[in-house]
Image (tube, rainbow, N blue to C red; front, side):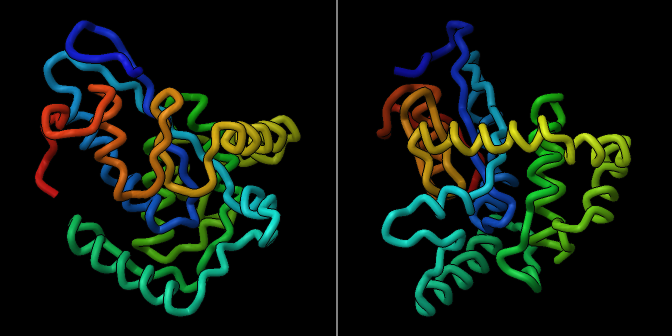
Length: 225
């Protein structure tokens, strides 16, 4: 059961995301505001940004070992429209990527470095915005380098680190950890052993983090949606 109420205790909320996911984009640009609103009054949530690649997870499916979701045309059309409606609802910009899904291996490796050094949230938001608001190729080293420079980071040094075997191994281990925790898609939110999947479950995950239950009596203050 998660830690509760204003006794100074802290509970971790893990935010697992893939830069290719438009639903993760919605969650990434909302999650910090929602967590801040929910933790007023002494409750404490430690938000952990956990980048991963869904491709290796999809490839382990027995029935459909593809690195892609391969949704049917009707489902693809629905998701496309659902994202458009959701961005309008949340007031978020949207420019559909000219390549979708777009590769994000380099950006994810850099995100892993950033998360370990405490600037993961800023980097992740910038990458998501580049992909889904500006239609920039986040698989491109120059695009990632520009994002790093805008954040005041040494792009050359960080991109070199992202190519090191240790970082590649860390990302593979991150994917293995996600699988071990039961994660099968993104965005996913994990509060101890309680898993929530999808942008539409973000608010429930935060409620669970601060109260350990879902219901009217457990709902923390949330900003207007």
